[in-house]
Every structure is written in structure tokens, then in C-alpha cells.
Image (cartoon, rainbow, N blue to C red):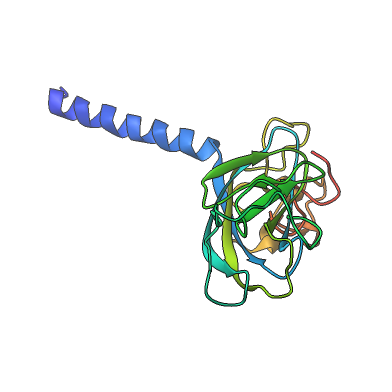
Length: 210
């Protein structure tokens, strides 16, 4: 006959098991770090292509010195400087703090990013720049971290999530990968190529839009 103590232990183990299964089925978080240079626009092309419904969270550190030394604002920029007028062709984002971090998704508008965290969405490649009007005398850079939820699996036919390859493939020998790893019926080992989120822009299987 089981005691109450033993029953409580069984329930506790079952609860832990269910939580573990739910976590395994849910999304993970992918984080990539980029260096945004201060010598041109864009200062960093991430290669990360956002698709419909996808969003990323951005944070930043570092400093840019617009005159080579002296004044060196962080990603939030220098508010007192007027960026609505310029003798050098205009600031990247007029009205936003000078020499701060700005970003853009695809052909969308530039937006102030600053230190973050800030959520960006849209469709197209994610790029960053320093909000300046003259880049040749700049020094320094920003370090930007981009994070987003990524579900396991290729996601064929599922456009509700961002997918980053077959589950359980990371850290394993791809020669042992079967049909589930590459979506091919023959499961050839040479076809099993894990997707890299930063390599093909969206963390999805190469050559597929889903």
C-alpha cells in the first residue's frame, strides 16, 4: 500500500516530466552579436532576414566618437545636437539623437534603437548604422545583440514561427542525421546540413521559403 508521501513523490516527478516536455516542444532563443562600425551606412548588415510575423529584440553597448576623440556618446546618442539640419547631406534619421544607434528592416524606415531593449519587426534584412551626417572622422563602434524566438524543426508549411532546423541536431555528428534532419526521403548523410540563423538570413532551410 502506497503512503501519502510516496504518492506525493510520484505526482511531483510527473509534474516535472510534463514541464520538461512542454519546454522541449516550445521555442528556444537565438542571440547573435554584431559590431556596428561608424565609418558608413549601414554600419552593419546582419544578414538576418525578417519574415512576416517575426520580431527581434535588440540591445546595444559601446561608444562612437564623432570627432575622433573627446565626445563619445553611447547608443542613446547625444540629444543636444540638432540633427534636423546638416552641412554634409543630412543625418541618417533626422530628429533622433546624434551619433546614436539606428536600425532598419528591409526597405522600412530607420528607427532609433539606442541602448534598448527595443523590438523590431517587418520584412527584409536587418541593418544598423550610426546616426551621423559625416562619417570619415568617426572612431569607435557599437556592439549590438539581436535575439529572437526560434522553434525547432524546418517548419515546412508552418509560417507561424521562425524555425531553425531539426531538433536535436546541434552538437551531433550530421553523418548520423536521417530523413527528419534534411527533409529528404533517402536521408543521405551528405544532404544533412544544419541551418545557421546568421548564414542564410532567416534560420530556415536553404532554398525553402517556409
